Length: 289
Image (cartoon, rainbow, N blue to C red; front, top):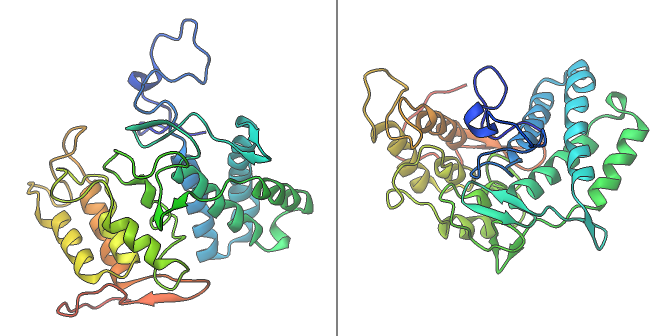
């Protein structure tokens, strides 16, 4: 599994992993903030599935996507115990603030998406044994945590304290909820009742509110969120802004703003459909292809 906090060269940063490994297992991470965060790895597998869906590159699927994604699935399958026949991910983190929860939304929804994506691949790029294994793990998945018509942070936490709103990960980046897909109102209500909100909670460096609003078809909200990412902070070099909790220069707000603008214009819908101008403000003009 990839670490949540990595440096440009690939490995974990020493300050998070811990320079002194005396008496420590290789898997032990010193940082209490990121020690049990795993969602980034499953998201990488989901992005690889997106890449295959776009390119149809069978060689990529067979030699890169499936070997990587299968190991991710295997880790979740073998690392966690079973309770009543279902995988029980505990203790696990949901973001850096909601620690030691059970079946975090990011991991359950991510594994749900990846297994469905793997099983949707053409039989020609995988083996029967692989498909049988994925079906076995899929049957052991806990349900996506939803209650009271809202997406939960985890099975045991309703709406957590982390202002990055990890309970909304099934909207973006996982795209399990959105315009044209089932239970849209659950996703909209969850968004409207999220923990972290602009401007109340300060920096929006990593928060995906703009993309969430775009995928939900909330044009006015998407406009407000996207504009904030491009105009709130000023910096000498275009694309770099200040205001990140971990120090400047920061590129995340601009990156999220660009993702949001693209999604406001066009983004994947249900199945093979596309949602075009789903959240584009009526008073804005655009040219795109």
